[in-house]
Amino acid sequence: MAKCSLLAGCALLCLVVEVGAGAWTLPQKKLWGKVTYFQQTTNEWYVASPQFIDGQVVSTGQRAHYNFNGQYESKALFAEGFYGVSDRFDVAVQIPYFDQSFADETRSDPVADAGLSDMRLFAKFRLVDKPVLFSLKTGVKMPTGEFKNEDGLIPVGEGQWDYDFVAQLGRSFWPLPLYANVDVGYRVRTKNDEIDRDPGDEWFLNAELGYNITRKLMLMGKYELLRSDPSIEFGSIVNRSQIKRIAFLMPVLLYAIDERTAVEAALRISLNGRNYPAGQQFILGVSSSIG
Image (tube, one colour):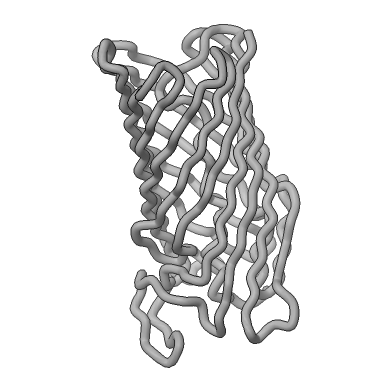
């Protein structure tokens, strides 16, 4: 097995671009699709465990530069679609493509990998309409992306199955052009048999507030939080250095081209974390619907 590197727990593969419109579901036989581009370049991360960086002791969770002038770059493209089986039941699929690399002064060439990542399938059930919308969403991540067990490399696939269970609460404040939504979820992460490693389950929270500035222009604010358990390696060894923590604040501007199509631009800003790249992420998306 390849030994752990400082990037081992920093991959953004577990960071799922939002699928669907919160607790709301589609009308029956309506198809909604979205393509999202994501990019991040950073020379900082939230440290996974106490260590020496640039000659100083850096504590867990502290934001610091990568050693040896390291720089991490990630580009991704997410294609996703939702279909309204009924007015209360949606199914969805998400297919990501990743292109990521890491370079520092100790390497003659960057460590890089690119390709299709793990596919995700979702189902959403809207159970309650008043006084707030309440939906349950379940999801499964299949290890369809290529997993490479190479030292220092962030592979495009994670090599194990994940299962999501999400409670979603949403409310429109009409006649005010305002809505709010909160997702609270738990992700069961199964063992990667190839490296005898269980990456540890995760809790996550996504909260958002949206306001229509004009009929075509919407401003949204989102807060995202993720907390993981430690990994279990070789059957019983608890590796706390693989615990992940991240919190993001994300302003989003969405413009409706017409009744079916919209474009959006977002800036995801890291607030704090552990074992994660720090800095800003730029996101651009286009969505449309038929039916």
